[in-house]
Image 1: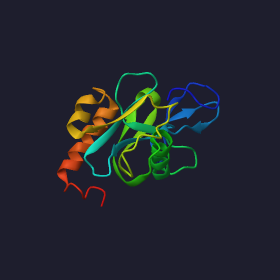
Image 2: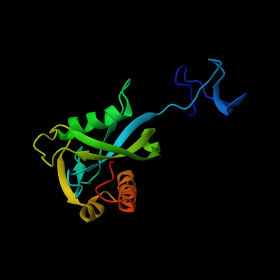
Image 3: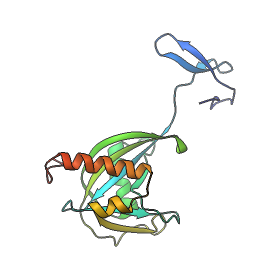
Image 4: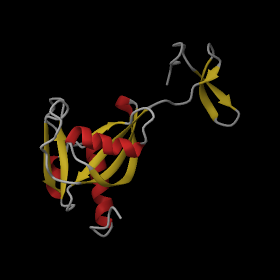
Length: 172
């Protein structure tokens, strides 16, 4: 962060008694702590845990995971369920937090979750946000996911975690 979001003044680094060096606005005379967006990225599994859902959206011919921003006054857990319902029309039966990663391009802290869905039906997929949604086996998903993407890193992490544990007990 280089400029104050309130007045636009260039920030300086100033020692804070308990926090170390923090960006400081000399005009507003206050410390400016980091501000960023928060979003969820969802590795969606079929009810039998044998398939992973990948999507294409916004006219891009690349497969990614379902993802979306956490709304103001909304818990991360509620965002997980809401995003899956809004974009895919499916109910989340179980979920599990996996890891987080900061995505600089959009100044967003991305929280990765694995979710177990109630059905493989894609009849209620959003036609305004999703161009294509398709189920893949684990191996197919690894080949189909957008290479060198955050979605790929999250998918690889999920598969690593999933294979380390007893399959069928991942959400318990």
